[in-house]
View (cartoon, one colour):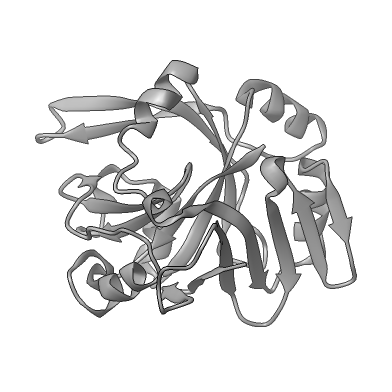
Length: 249
């Protein structure tokens, strides 16, 4: 398992040229807010960071135009910030079978189909996703993703441009998520993930490539994403995307 991407609900100002886009670029993350994918109901713009990325979503219509229903509902209720943390896995079917065997609910693996041109046409994306339920105390869920094959992964990698690796920023090293996690939330995490370190108020998960995800009990929901870099060419050390702070080790 390794970090794949973060789905972040954002206001439209993050997908326009302005203060937010400038702040993102000021720390070395190449970002073109006008570039992205979507339908008449939503727009997605990406920030590519090595092999990981931020997927920033703005709803253009209340129904979301085919976007994931739970995320649309959260957006319409004012939910901004990290809504889903996606984890890349090698065998999603085997993982889901194992999770269900531990008594945990997880959706059946399925491909995403995007409809366009008045729903006359659709495109099936070359990966499968599965999702745990939302946490009890935090408006966040964890999802799992498996690419169709290595050839598809390499093909998709060609489209991950412009990429922060051009500025010696290699990828995501650590994610710390603070929020009002319940005891049941922590129990779920202990069952789903293998390499877990636990303290009274926090839980640390070790993934491949020395990546870490830390869940910490706190009153306010916010996120910190630490990036790894070879050298610093930029003055600014951090920026915010809604409730998510992006910084460096």
